Image (tube, rainbow, N blue to C red; front, side):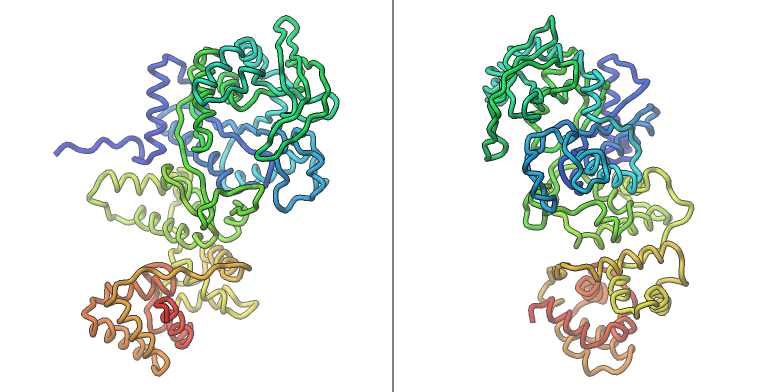
Amino acid sequence: MDQPVIIGRGTWLDKVAHETAERERRLGRSLSMMRVESGLGASGLPHIGSVGDAIRSYGVKLALESLGHRSELLAYSDDFDGLRKVPVGFPAWLSDYISHPVSRIPDPLGCHGSYAEHVGSLLRGALDKIGVEYVFQSGAEAYASGKLNGQIRKILSSAAVIGRKINELVGQSKYEESLPYTPVCKNCGRIYVTRARTFDSERDTVDYVCDGTTLGEKRVEGCGYEGEVKVTEGNGKLMWKVEFAARWAAFDIRFEAYGKELTDSVKINDWVAENVLGYPPPYHARYELFQDKSGKKMSKSTGNLVTPDEWLQYASPESLRLLMYKRIVGARNISLEDVPLYMDEYDDLEELYFSKKRDPNQMKDARLRGLYEYAVFLKVPQVKGVHVPYRLIAQLAAVAPEGAVEEYVVKRLATYGMVRGPSPDLSRKISWARGWATREGKAAVEPPELGEAVRAAVREFAAALPRLATEEDVQNAAFDAAKRQGLRPGEFFPAVYAILLGTDRGPRLGPYVMDAGKAAVSKALLAALGN
């Protein structure tokens, strides 16, 4: 049988990097620098989705370097965009600045030079904590310094053909009537509310009228001012339908991922880059957005966010990287309830990586090992960490006496034979898990789906617990309940652990039940069965 062809480390990151490099070879472009780009929003609180684009692109950068190419991640801040809504948690007076460029809005907290700097510092701070390395580029600075001037001139000179193409591709006629450029109104200081009418290529000026626009479902009226702006002075910007293309050409971008909601914009920008700017667009990978548990899109304006800072308050950077690298296709519903899942999955990957076991499926084996290496950003530690189910640590930490949390948890885990003693790695996990277990607003654990025989055995075991006296009594009752339902221990015990700890493994059941309390364990088991 032919051996499977494994590209790089066998992950989707390696496949994307390989296809990006191969495309560049076919195009005949220099491979001396393979720059990837990620856009950074600057209009609201960062959330897992908004950092996800940069984390994924950084993974592609690492994969390109693994293939022998120099690469860097350009983090482009959209800080010249206008404010569309006031995000939840921000002061109401920001509504006075709707449509103003966020880089020209005062910082609500007064600790940065502008609203954009404040929000951008939160997003960049999150990337720093996660370990993403990047070259920062402010959009406002790019326009002010003239880095996009050449692209602006070409696009505005070809505005008529671009307008027709946009209508052909996505059925939007707006740009057949106006230029794909929005000046900052000299009178009211707002962007988006202006309509660019003509471009004078000899003077580099755009004639415009401030006659209003629709943002979302709300009409924002203009001030009526008519004037002109010089496009080389940084008092206006390209519209999204063409701005990506300008950035790609100006900064020589070879790869950029994008969210599903930007599919039409990317299609148009690809055409503009190729046919107007003479720059073959970068290779793309499309991903779907993260959603909350109700299936709604995470939104800065509605506030249903999981922020990277929240995640990192309860979990490791590696677990968040794993969340991003596990796969790129398909939407995912994410909440802080998922922290134990990704913490345990990372431990499982690390356990596999450091073991001598190999999956007989070579592709799967390579992918799992590669996924672990990317989760540690290719900086594999010399020894593996402490691997204990996250929910078990959380439960123990939640009931530990104040002032002796770590000592209590370590002692109990040692009793279960799961650790030898304290360690820095275990200390971090105890701190994370205690915070997660005692946070406000935590949801109830969803019980696993169980077959009838397993349900019957769990019900019998739970009913017996209150009258048992010793650890051995508990252990024997568990085996007896499984046996009476014709179950093997390997079918029964993982179900009990799944209900109690959210994982299929755990400490010896007898000591754990006596520590956690027979009545409490019985109640939890019966509740999961709907009793």
